[in-house]
Length: 299
Image (cartoon, rainbow, N blue to C red; front, side, top):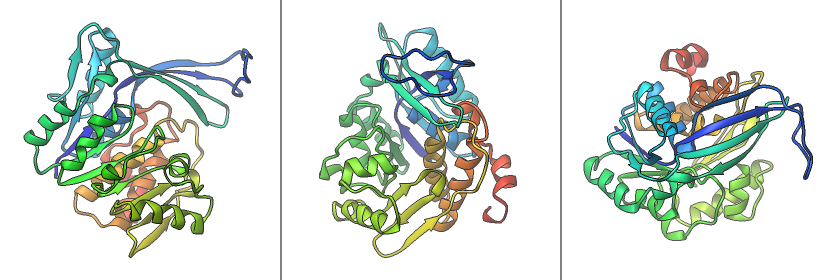
């Protein structure tokens, strides 16, 4: 099954420091780097590097950053025929601060990402009527909501924002992290019972499957009839940027490839764990061969 990823593309600017600055404080940092990112583009690249047929639906500006973003997508095997360049608008950018533990804080300037339109997604639905569609919330909600008209709709509700029940009821799966789960349900998923309670809220609003990502503690999945708590492989994290994007992209790919939930969740968890052992966003996404070697029996 082909996959259309509807989402953002940003050029990320990353600063390293021992700790995050307090309000009004300047902290002397260490290394600096810039690389292609954006939740939608990251997820598309994760799928492409695993060997999936993936089409990116989004916007970049008519600046040199847009060239970098397009080149990175194509290098990962992502089809960019549905990507649009917006004249007179800057490409999206993100400022990321990493502390010495690998945790991050991010500010995003959306730029051209705000120009992704419902009409653009409708064109993708017409071009790929049998595809799975995956969206996030770094683009206008009006555009992201169009994925509900697809055969199989996945939503990664990041950054956190309230969502209408009309969208939730059309989703095959929703993949919030802990913060996003609390925004959507009012329940912080701190343990198995609270994860179940939060997922129940989303299931009652119509989502068919709920996957709550729990960072180093793995993820919780339920369809209301079945559930799994899948651990995350233990690794030494050096950069957690885009780990959630890697997980989501891999999960959608393996489910679309016909694997069951247990196998898909375990492979996605291994992909995300492998990604945090490397620096960067799209550069950290594992290839098919790398994940096969790392995931062992789950492959």
